[in-house]
Image 1 (tube, rainbow, N blue to C red):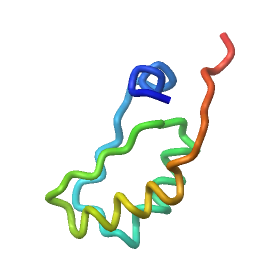
Image 2 (cartoon, rainbow, N blue to C red):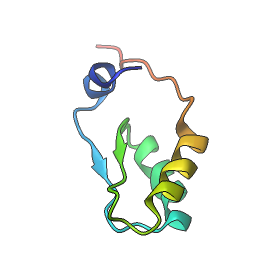
Image 3 (tube, one colour):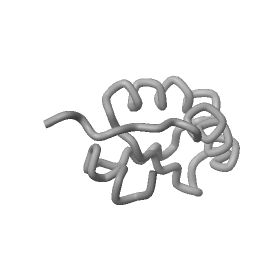
Image 4 (spheres, helix red, strand yellow):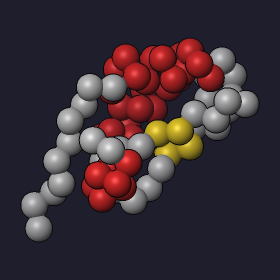
Amino acid sequence: MDLNDALGLCPLIAILRGVKPEEVEAIGDALDAAGIAIIEVPLNSPAPLDSIARLAARFGNRKRSAPAR
């Protein structure tokens, strides 16, 4: 899925500013359940690369399709 596909599913980007790595998976689960397909972790967050790695490991292979209209 590319950026345009993801934005077509949900035109929002969740920005997890200041979130700790041990919190990102639960937040990611909630965002995924809400249909949000794009998550940003700013590099000024605590241990951002760890947070990104955790999210990628948990959600990186997800495939979504557009809702039926």
